Structures are given as structure tokens and as C-alpha cells.
Image (cartoon, rainbow, N blue to C red):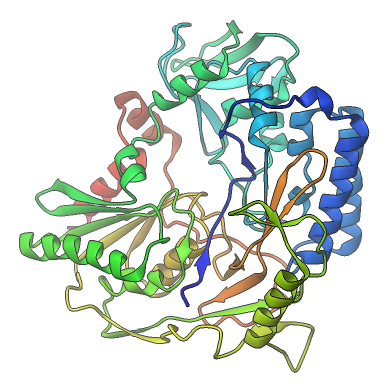
Length: 489
């Protein structure tokens, strides 16, 4: 059985349908009741709810979020202050009901400028009617500093990994709380002058249009096709892999096609781009690496574990494909599936996956016949997640080449994964997706890791290089990689 590791955005919002009901139907008590149900689900069903924070700390954080919701029992505030924020698990997601969210969209004015974050600074990321230059630095919105705004944005990441790859423009719109359709900003021009401007909010259709015409990200083609490759220059080939959620046979055929091209053209350099790759099948990780391994055999090591293998919270549990609530038989079958594949550890309170769990697991993985032995640069960012982080971790452990970009959003040695449970809250119709296990990478079997970092890049893009690339409307990380390879040739 091929197991898949998926990552979801904390707010899966942009899926509007034709409205059938209105947000006005949701009362203050309904928001609070759903908050309490969501908290109970997370604390009882998550595979390790106190991985990063003590029970006391989690309780305090939940109390703080609930009080914020009591002060402002609004639709968007329910999501911004969702209980999932306290766990430090980027795989746990809260998704809106499409009909309710369309109602919200129709009544909301959005921030009209596209933005991009680099090294904690927020830059204007597109042309606009206010003649604010691309690359200008946003300092304040409605008298609130950008630093304070960034702190309020719930980020999808493991542990306390600092995330910059967030849609600041979207959250400025949410934080404005529909007070009016104007935004007062302070910004710094490219020559260092500070200015103020009054902006008119735009409706969702305009916001969607502007977001699609922003400068960054530039690699939109590879986002569409998932796996995409082409020549950067006579010495260098570019391979973008935006997902590992493919059938292994299909994935191999695609890789074989590109690495045959690389072999035929005798390229000296390879840039592999896994930015915005949210993960997928963990068995595809060594498959990709087998095309670039320096060694004939390399170690592919991962292990599943969980503190919770039974369904402890069964209310509101649904099949996400059919929206049907689980029956007693569904729950019994699910419990039996997990109990057959996980054994209690001799020490501690963890259950670890046994040999029945995955008959496709190959620890000593062979290099592919079309392997590339030249120089390799790997591109990562905060949205390099889950199984994609395992690839970055394997790449770094094997010392295969330089990593350029930003820290991955998942921990470098473990993350949550596999077999998600989905709940639909009774009042807001919000769906919650929770992973059932954790997965440990690269021979790491420590089940009591309190903290984590993502895979740290060898090269980060400084602001000057970033701004020059943004003004020229070229990909900063990719341009840096090309220059890095030219310096080391």
C-alpha cells in the first residue's frame, strides 16, 4: 500500500460556490461551541498534542484564543483564532464551508496591493494604480506595524518554525474586519523615502486578478504541471517537482524522461526546485534521489509512530469524499487497521509501525541507471513540506549539494503524516483534518523531541539581491542558483 503524506493550508478558503445560507445565521454561542468541540477533537485525537508545548501551556493558549473569539465572534476571527494554532502541527487544517465563505467574500473589501515577504520585510509585489514602485517596503497598515501584523498571521508549519511564505495581503484584509473599504499605509520607497497613501479596498474578483498578476512567484508553469523541466543554459538543467503525490510508476516515467535528456545533452549542473511542494507519497522520495545519488546504495530511513491509534473522538467524524458520517462499523474497521499495523513500544507510550505497515519500504536504496553525477542545487522554502522536507533532509544528510532559499516548513527529522481523520463542526460546518501518525526521518527514533527546525538552506537571499531580482521580474532563488553554479564551475 502506498501511503501519502499531505499538507493543507491552515485556511483553505478560496473555494466559493453558490450561496445557500448566510453567515448571519451563525450566533456568537455557535462560534464558541464549535471552538470547544474543535479543541476537544484536537486534544483527544491528535497523535501527539503536547509535542511542542506542555499541557499547561496548551490550555493557556486555548483560553487566550477563546477570549479573543468572545470579544469578536465573527466568521473570519473564528478561523484566525482556531484551536489548531496551539499545537505546532502544519498538517492539521481548518477549512471553511464554501457557501458560508462565499457570503463572507461578497461582503469584504480586500487589500489592493500584492505583497511578498523576504527576511521579515514585506515588499510590494506588483504594479498598481497608486504608482507605488515594485519593491517598496510596506511599513504600516491602518496604524499597525507590519511586524505586529506578521505576528497575528497563523502560519502552517511544524513546531515554532518561522514562516515568511504567507499571503500578507489576504490577512491584512481579514484583520481589517470589514470596518470600511479604505486602507491607510506607510511605505518606504526604493530610495529610502517614507510616504503615506490611502488605498481603496477591492472586491474578491479584483483581488484574485491582482494576485495572479503579481511578480512572484515566477515558476507558475511548474505549479500547473507538477513535474516540469527545461534548459536554463547550455550547462544547466532545471527540474521543478511541485508534488510527490503521484503513482510511483507515473513518477518514474516522468523522471526517466528528464534524466534521459540530461544525460543526452551532457549537462554539468542541475537545479531541483521543491519550493511550494506540499509532500505526497514518501516512497517517491528515494525514487527521486536515486537519480542523483553519488553512492551506488544510499540509506532511505523513516519510521511511523503515534500515541493515539484508536479513534477516541467519534462525533462529527465524516468521510471527506462523500460527506457521510462514520458508522460504528467504519470506526471499528479503522481501529482494526491501525492496531494491526502498530505495536506498543517497550518503553514510553508510543506505538510504532510494524512490518505489515508498508511492504514497499526499501532501506538500502539502489541508484538509478540514469543517475546524474554533476553539481546539484536544491531550492526550498517554507512551503516545502512533509514528504518534500524528507527529500531536503535526505539531500542534506547525503551532502549532495547546496540548498538555496528558505527553511522548510516541516521539521528536518520528523513531522506528522498519513491517514487523516476529518470532522465537520455542527454550527459553522467547518471541516478539521487531523493526521493520525508522526513520521521520523533518517534513523531518528527519538519519540520525545521537544523542538525542531526545518531543513536550513546553505544560502539565503539577502535583501539587495532580492530587490534587484524583483525589479527585473526574475526569480531570486533561481537566479542566485545559476550564479552560484557559475562561480563553482
